[in-house]
Image (cartoon, rainbow, N blue to C red; front, side):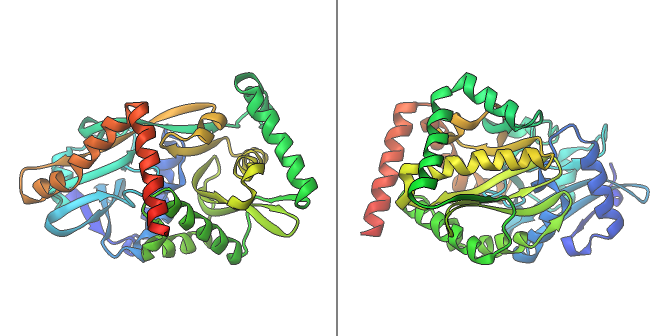
Length: 361
């Protein structure tokens, strides 16, 4: 592959022909059509993160590959929306042969870090340091089939959750679900709930980072066929009790930011919300809800399966690689060690919640 075949562009410099080709390559990919991998997500990132770039690979004048990424000081690169996006990697024509080292050199990168790399990403999977499970809900055969799966694998969970939904309607107000809520006030409510949840559990509040808040607002108004911001809200009476913001394509709903009103936690409104999201997604022809990586009790209850995602980094010797290792690798290894030991993981979770309580006091 010669360097003349690669251009590194800002997202706004992509022509409509290149965007169309990107979409066409995703359409023929064997991977689920996750909206994080669409050009519209990259364009939204470009509006809030000026260091966003896209490497475009050509055969003659025909674009045959795209690698969205971010480039920092000393060539320290990372997958687009590292730490936030739930699907990362390159978009390549089937059978395209690319030398990873040369591609990185043309991008002027000394490292390329990823934490939610799609499966089948042959360029970067060999550089993965850890494999994780992303939890999924399969509703391709319809919601009724999904409910039958839940009855078989966790009958008590389904029965209890549906009973709580009925009780919520009787004791708080008529339950109403909106799959695609356009009211910005509902989005602000969700973000406030989610920020409180991050603080309560001792985790970094993502919405304290201005670029993430701007990104979510930008995506809420994005209406592309394969990348549409989707705010789903569960109401009891006139008040929202649970909400979720994510992205959807024609076939995948990427679940991203769910939360709920903790004062109504006895009704499990977050679980009810997810059941109604699955029902609405199936009615829209969406076959897969991607709950993302990271173990959680609600995911275990709702899932029908798992798919692999990868974390790691391509590096080349130099100062950038050394800085990457020092800034990320010790923490990653410690995190992986704890996650692989349930008793340690439970202790860590309790410690985070304790830190959250101290922070609020």
